[in-house]
Amino acid sequence: MPEIVGVKFKRLGKIYYFSPNDLVFSIGEKVIVNTEKGLECGEICIENRNVDNEKVVKTLKPVVRKLTEADKKISELNVIKEKNAFKICQEKIAEHGLNMKLIDVEYSFDGSKIMFFFISETRIDFRELVKDLAAAFRTRIELRQLGVRDEAKMLGGVGICGQELCCCRFLDEFIPVSIKMAKEQGLSLNPTKISGNCGRLMCCLKYEQDVYEELLKVTPGEGAVVKTPDGNGTVTDVSILKGTVKVRLDRAPDAAAGQYRVKDVTLISRPPRRKNNKNSQPKDLEE
Image (cartoon, rainbow, N blue to C red):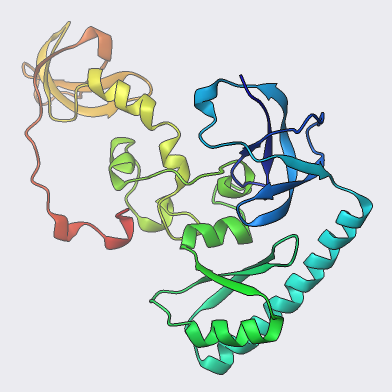
């Protein structure tokens, strides 16, 4: 079983495995590691441990060393360089009249490459921009287009729940979310109520989806015909999480619907299926 340490390069970035190279690390320590991009500065998030061979996909690259005072000065200098590069790139974008918004700039630890992150609603021909940036910084330049979710993750913010965005707190990867989840959870399909700061469906729709899917398997839908302790009737309302349904009995169609526990009713026939009208679905709710 190979020994590894987990390293991440951003606060909420992915965790990568490296060989500790006979060194012992503790969580939070800064280290210099050898990556495919060259030397990079990262933070230990998983201490020394042995893992199964199948969990290690590629040959482990080694941790070069713990962060030294000289390395720390280089990292601090790179932060200053990034701010300067951000300003220069914005000026170059304006000069070329490009319809793009610069989000962030990242220097590699050894200064061999600068990455510029931007968003744009259309495809951008930035070849001339890259030439100007390469001439200005005399190093390798990479421009990477991000989505609106990535922008929200990088810029941060507060959600409608009043807490810091999930993608800024603990989500290291974006999870697929669909309008079907909002429907199954009985939420309003108003885009302003189920969309996050990025304008896409909120990531938290996924959190309870597995529970809803399991409960929906045993819960009669609205319009279903069921057998209750008081006779047969039609479901008029469903409370999935409470595990209850309201049923209007066939023998008393004008009376108020009675409430029953799901486990006390038996499904006779499911509600008629509704025709799907794709044209009626708001585009901004589709993932």
